Length: 294
Image (cartoon, rainbow, N blue to C red; front, side, top):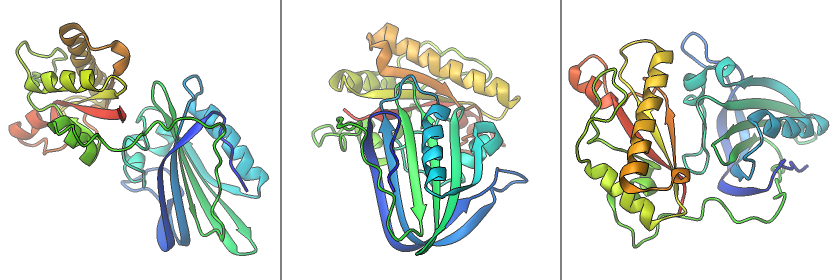
């Protein structure tokens, strides 16, 4: 069988194992856990970037789901962002690292399906999300005698063009190459405040230099808070902090607005304990994530 995407697509990630065990998610996050089914077989996992700026995640998922059902798959479980379990479901999932696969914590969809063929059962999982400019799909198949082939809808240049150039040895470039995102640790935010405190920030100087040297690169500023207050308020505050840094980059360094986006995840991704003052301070931060390699 083949799956056809609803927009031109470029492969950004591939992993294959001839025989492995895999925990297929089959229910939403509840009571501190995500239910899963342990399956065995040959694994093929791919991630794709779609030129789907105007398509919603459901518009991307629906035609793929229809193709699976037509090919004999039964949908075992399907959910969207909040019915899945939001942050907890996403981070219980096996997802290719940024920038190959981008998951918007406020807009993603998941589907698990199964069919029984002459070679035995085949399980397949789809993750769908998007950024402001691209759609993203991850396909994981386990157990099929022949892996699902996903041809490109049209020949397009890949969104991910390879590692950071060898001649760029800046801390930002090295951080992007190693983990996809870098914390801007010298930024100062008071507890509950959205505005960046006045001052000079070496991290923003470095980010401006990187973006000028790589004008095709696109980055997302992701705001984080400590655990004071409720989740909705903290998500709003964290996004406001990221937007404050974005405004700073545009106004102070003349960085093009379309080169930087701003998101917020509140207190959902702490990097330290919220039980100490030091931990609270470390958790109030903005990280920069590389979306498109130069």
